[in-house]
Amino acid sequence: MPLPSLSPATGGRSIGQAALAPADIIVSTTNAGISRAIRSVSGSVVSHAMIYAGNDQVIEAVGDGVRKRPLSAALTGASLAVAFRHIRMTPSAANAVISFADSQVRRGYDFLGIVGQAGYQLDRWFLCRVQHVRDCEQAAQRANLWMSRDGRFFCSELVAESYRRAGTPLVAARSDSVSPQTIVEVSISGLLSYVGHIIG
Image (tube, rainbow, N blue to C red; front, top):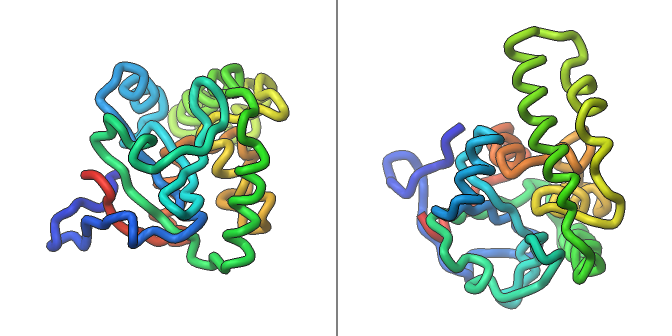
């Protein structure tokens, strides 16, 4: 599913850091091989997701674990970065999102979970769209998401779980089933509003 472009004709807009609000979700991608592999497996236009924590800081789960760092550092090498905002976000909910994500800083990365999540996305596509299996999403979850490790997160899992803990879930499914592409799909459904392109 395409993201809004920067063309005024399609409603896209370029924004700076000043347009961001705490708990905004930023999805991004780079031209690196791992990014291309993630996009290929998930059928996504993006490969990473992070939470804007305010004051030029983001919280994200990357290969060396959950960390908090400047937005500019998190977007180094990005070829695309787009911000979204929950339509029912309040200051107290934003604080809760950031508080949970911040409490996970220095936790490990969920390497097994990302493998299971990739398997889930492939199985979900095959079972739902090709074989038209009844309860295909649950079958795909049972087959793959058992690999997720408690207390560890991959990028979009951290975003989804932070929102869930704040009482503003992005999806009904488990947090470890959420990919960066899922966040794009949630934005298209209307639960997340498009803030703008930081890079793109």
